Structure formats: C-alpha cells, structure tokens
Image (cartoon, rainbow, N blue to C red; front, side, top):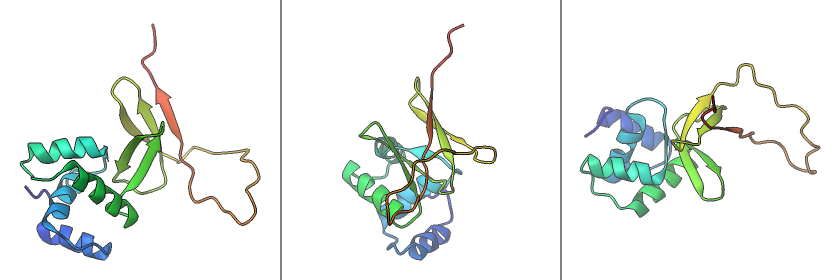
Length: 139
C-alpha cells in the first residue's frame, strides 16, 4: 500500500537522515500520499491498521517524533496532551474545530502579530503558533 513511489519515499527519508525501514516507509506513504494533512498518533495508527500495516502505537509515536525531528513534520500541540502532526511544515496557523476535533490551516498572507512583549536577553522568536478555536454559531 504505497501511495507514493517507493523510490521517492526512500529518497525523502534518506535526505532527512532517516533509515528507510519498512515501517517508516509504510507510515510515510500514509502521511505524505494525499497532500497536506493533520494527524494524531492515534488516527495514524487507525489508518495503518485499516491498511493492514502491522505496527504498534508506540512505533507510530516514535516514527512521528523522528519525522518531526528530521523536519518532515511540524508538531501542533495544545491543551497539554493534545498533539497533532502537520505535513505542512511552512509557517502557517490553524483553526481548531471544537465539534470534530480537527485542524484546518489558516494562511498567513494578511495576518499580523503585533505588540509582543520584549524577549528575554539572548533569545529570538523561532515561530509563533496561533490556534483559533471555533464552535458552531447559535442562530
């Protein structure tokens, strides 16, 4: 069940400094095979099981964290233990949909962040994460 050509995935992992194991390749095919998306470890594990990929939830967590450390994924964390992994690693923000628990990208073309407090000495901004929580409006 490779959604991308095996050769492309192998090269992508090698360029990121990762050994292209069978499990990494299988999870990469699910992650990167259909455009940008947001996944949790649990949702990726469910997709892997549905695709008949024999992988433990611990391996999914480890692989997602390895992909993040290699720059292949961006982590979007909020509310303590709520974490998504985003295949779009560019600078962008998110809407969080309360009813479904999903994330939707927000473009940055017209967004400005103003009035940040002075940074502590010896630090610089790495990135700014903005999550706008949405709920259904009441008519």
